[in-house]
Image (cartoon, rainbow, N blue to C red):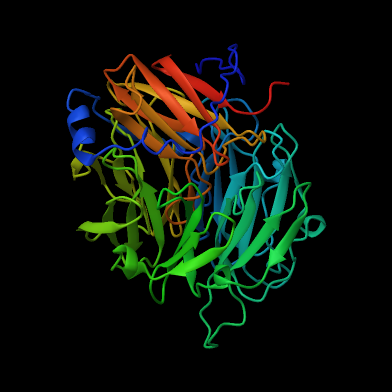
Length: 511
């Protein structure tokens, strides 16, 4: 039975300290990170395919079509729900699986108002677009079908997991020329509101293409305005995209995959103006045709990158300030994308490629070796992958969306290892606080021994969204210190946090 977890734990809020980014505080070397983890021992992950037991497989052949896969708790019960976007050769309703108890899921999309039968969907993301403390949904529709024209849909959550479509009222056009593939939300101008970004999957012959990527500025109160010029519109034939502060300068950039050319890197100048960078200028020499995953694989306080294309994953290590060096290529991977999570609770991030029959365990220094088998079953054409602790047992599970077979839900039963889960609420009241970063240290060692670094974001990999609740494996550590820095510079420290619990770091004003 899943333990009862209150929405807001009975604890006083911790006051923010007025420091912008604390660069000296968080500056750590790779060597320090490696040596610091040697005595942190986790457990052994063990994977079980619970797709049939949980009821999350979706349609059977030939009418399958899973692409995007998202986790978020939409009804405030502390159980991450599962959403899978669907498209194949005919219009298909998207699937929303309400998490009942971590073992059983109920498909509830139509009753909840987010079945989204307008054409077919690829990208989608849950985000608190009105800063009211619940997750709304933005769904990017891909293709036009007879009687089912393509519309990008914007859904507002009523607070208990029922949604109303508001795109027309909010200023999002209902008619489009070319298909939307990936979508994300990010606070482009740091005004506390999440803006919308759509990657256009253009395959035509026009140069420049008549329709580019789309950006909608959030003016608050469900009013969005289109931005039609500038580098944000660049990236023909986009696929997955990620909102990330890859260079660690305190604002959110965008990296978009591109099937026809170089990775598109859109650097934010801090004021919401985006500059298109040449990928080679920051050390990236591989193409990313499908998606990009970002994570701190070596616990040095910056974000490393995995670029996926043509059944290969190219891993790059961040040398600091967003300059990357190539580490290795994972060849003959299954599926479109790989994602990172601490599967063995030993404080470093491991790697899973969608549909692969084995995971990759981090040796503690950002180097990976084959780990336990994953019983994916009869899987065909896996696409997105996303991670969440679906049963609140402290280890990370994951779901895979599949185009030509049923989708897959994999439960992880890690033998040992302490953990911590962190929910964020921004100073503006936004649940998830996308753009914030959270650092975990040994107790009493803030600024010295980094145990984990996580960036809260709306999207990852190829059309994937991990549960916005951040998970940290702690190994044998019983207490840690937690430091969260929000986009506006507000920083909250939590000292002596006991392991194996769910905490909320809430920077919003005390009501």
